[in-house]
Image 1: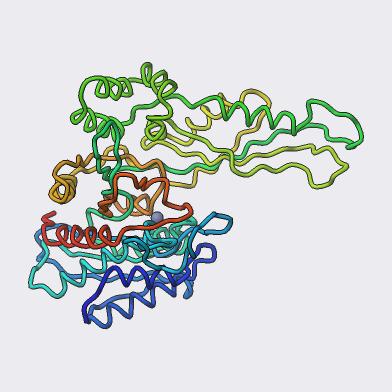
Image 2: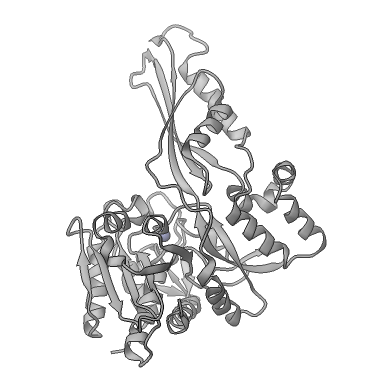
Length: 435
Ligand SMILES: [Zn+2]
């Protein structure tokens, strides 16, 4: 009755949990079956029975606070993407397991389950309680997953100090150095609605300067201009850790990013190389949904654009709105939904060295660094309970494999070796964890 993380990952990819609608019960039932076959106690906690969450834990010696391993079992859609293989086949080609969720993050789930089962079968007593949570709905706001659990069942996470999950522990080569970013903080999401109002009128009039033309100007401004630079503490930690391992010109270039006045020209000049660092240095907005008009012969009296805004930790949605007003100029209504929690900009680094040590042992030339994730994870919900989240889904991948551009994209895949590597690393964490 051994558990094989690779074949379990193949099985999970074949269970289509595309969100929406999610159907996470497919994957959760599979995991329940695995835990039951291995005699592990577990609990199902669901807001909607078709979208359950699974919790399992192993009691520790009580010498350390609890450690949470959390991951989501839903995946993003594949529609319209140019996949070269069936995204739900889970087949192995040339040493890679292909399919939606192979990186994000069914691989993380099988690493955690493998580590948990090995710990349960061993005679090692962990220093603190180990809690595993397989969650629904991360990809669409966590209403049925982490947000629901944290708001309605916070007792499930009593005594937990750290969480591990996405994103971190994957290689990122910059300036010839193989870094392994480990997420210690993340940006939060702020949705902006920009509205432009005008008179409208009959479509037969050769109107100029109407709402749609003004919207086009706003979109052009958003494409050409940027929010100001802010060097928040997690970014500072990340850049300084990088500088420690770079020399000469590269070290000096990264050094310029530590100061708002020099960072902006550096980013402008080296966007093709340093673009990956831009989102950790400024708030960003991306226009994603545009709407105006619903009848061919009526000039629209309003034009709207929704912006996917991402806010650096420690800053407020209100100050972000002021930056957006500045970008778009006069005559545009700017409204925002600030429902998302603002994330902590003073991370508890207590577990960092343990995680970095595990990564470094497996790649002595690699350099683990603290990392501010430009996107959001379920870590933001657990942060509400005072739990420090770390991105730790360790992967050793070929140098030409670009992790960040394969996630959520066509031809998502992970090497068989990376899955086994991550499972071993996760098991090391559980046995070495001392609080
Ligand atoms: Zn994910």
